[in-house]
Image 1: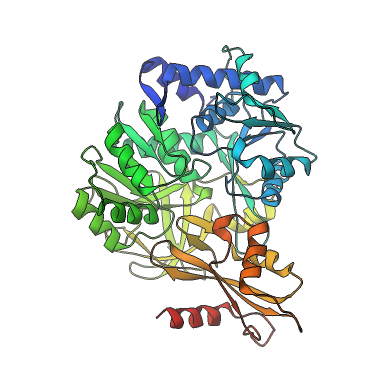
Image 2: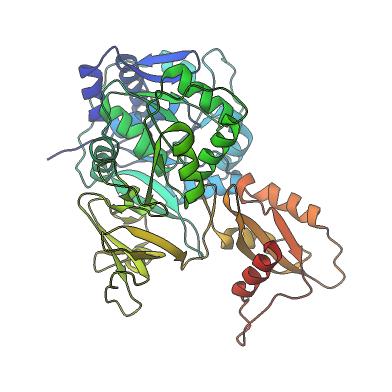
Length: 514
């Protein structure tokens, strides 16, 4: 049996042809128009030699171009490789090379970094710059999107794919090594979005969703883009999160549901105190990416009368694994219960399952589980053991099956819902000629959950400032990864084997905060 996620856009376009699919300020696309644009772009891809199984990278903010490219790539039977819009050339180049992407589409604002990354690769043969429709300028490297679009046919037959064929490669990382591409299938993505529509959100045709989560992230793709299109609903897009603008859009477009990270809800609460906003249409909000403070959850419901449903997932799980749901009472501080068809347990160090109330590592199996990491069989085997994905997150479960995360085994830092991997920042710091040792940790932050702190020791006779080190990081890392705090120490604490003791650095940081 064939299954292509792009097929469901055509089904929606046939069922709800005149419903608005996408809104971006004054710009609107109906479903018939969106589907036609997707077919045109699929023909562009075909003309560039893109075939079934090829990889195509996209670096696009929350604009209509994202779903257009996303579904066009899938229509060709190819695989989407979303690239974080904040990445610098070196980071982008890794994605292009590791995924073996044959084409790369990027938004004009990212031209310098995208072009540098493309020039440095050998596998990628097509570079296309996307800009506003009224901008007909030509990039120095690659091609402009609009001339290609205007000459492309609007007739295209979707390529048959199987449920287990890879639809998307989402890059994630552990605390060591390079980022890994989680291969998510057409069935993974379809069924996870279907659960959001029918099980989590009970989303009906004609509703409006606010797209503030970046669509290059699995949370935004599944809970907002794919679930919305399956539902015959409208996506109202915000390319860059701004709390006042988000509140204005909710009133303007009569938004009924949204998904965000805890920081977004906190900023919206703060903004709402200074203005008069109409949120009567909003009935539902999803939260994920990091722990939602109970205070924020309660304040949001008390002020707006809206339940925020907190959940949990990973790129490797498409991403939804557990959630608080509408037809069961929410448990503040809980990531809810496993979604239908997903088995989530807590495992002890010896491989046995933990009892109720006992701390254990969250392990997951089910229809949402990735095929594996692209071209990394050893890493796949380490992550998925006997069918169970080992998450590295420690939690407890109560007698009603609600899970509560208590800590992480990994050193992963989650800043405002964005994953930050210390090893990557440490590698950059170690390239600085004045740095002798470096260790990166997460420190508590009221607004973003965690912030990045770097602790370094310097080489003899080095004379570098904290500001200079931060500027150095800014040259090589996306802005959100740049350490907010950098502390220069005479030496970093070490154990008997010479290993740097991050736990002591965390304890010292917490004692200062406290």
